[in-house]
Length: 488
View (cartoon, helix red, strand yellow):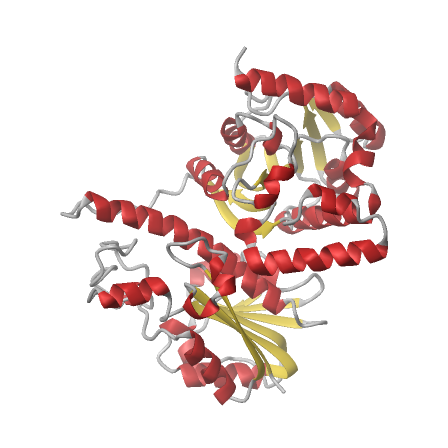
């Protein structure tokens, strides 16, 4: 008997024995309910663009926790799938309108291709030894343009040692992204779960205990970022055709340089995800934002993380195609060049965000001054960019090479002056892709303060070649820096 078959048997036996007591074990008490509600909120955000009445698959429905939200709260036509008959019996009692199907993830699903408008799978893939096959099958039954929300157990988290069940499969978010992209999934959002072990949330049975555990969770989040989360929820949509992978043209380069570039691309992705977490935390530090503006919002995939429910969402995007996608996501989007000022009245917004934009602009003073103008008193500025003083930039300069953050300075191609640049030799993305200037930790901080902002704080993410979490400890040399400041 193979290890994977044994794992399946153990997993089925475990949940069959637990049965109706699963809710008591997994969701009872203030702490576990708080974790559950956080996960369900992530599902709601991931399915925001799915219309009521859509056909949605709850893959690994368990006792129907997610099924109830999809059916009763969101008004979807839900199919609940699980491999344990005892679990499905509970689903039928709780959600009589939902269709139930007995099937196992990791094996061929009994549905036609492109059968569902959305697919959701929470707390399930970690129990599936063939998780990659399961994800490919979920992508197969999802129609083009459909939404997907999946949760994984993060292999890079220290808290994963809290899993005592032998069948648990922890994976990296990079491997999940790669498998999904191979099946045509375009990942648009990534939400970190909790960092503390399950036992910590189980003991939080009262409000005071929960407050203490949440305080520890916030500290772990600041120290480790998304890379250290115990679980990670990824959301995306299926493309009409699988997106082609970027590739570098054939050229005379050493094998070692090619390997360095691949490793650098993976580190960049991890650091960028942690950086978006920093931006979201800073944006949501405003207590009651009514209007939130994202400058250079692209397709507004991250706006749901920057602006809470109920806030009006606005964006500026130069690319007309991306701006159209942003509008389809419910963001009021203006196609405009940020070098020419902001087309809004004074004191219009409570929060203004900008991610990887300031380095492309020729008049950064005007950019910061315009943000100050459109912010209301006590409004929050959040501006993120690459860090000139990061260790990998310093090392490249010491070699006499172009800094990594300044290799896209020519319309003839990327990677100019640095043989290890991970985009070296690729065609320029668009007319405004060049980096005109890069700030250091102190430079960005002083620029913002010089324009009248107060309460200036800087967070860091990414720390090549070490783990991204080190950027939170030493932001002065992190790969990305995010400044948060307040208008007096």
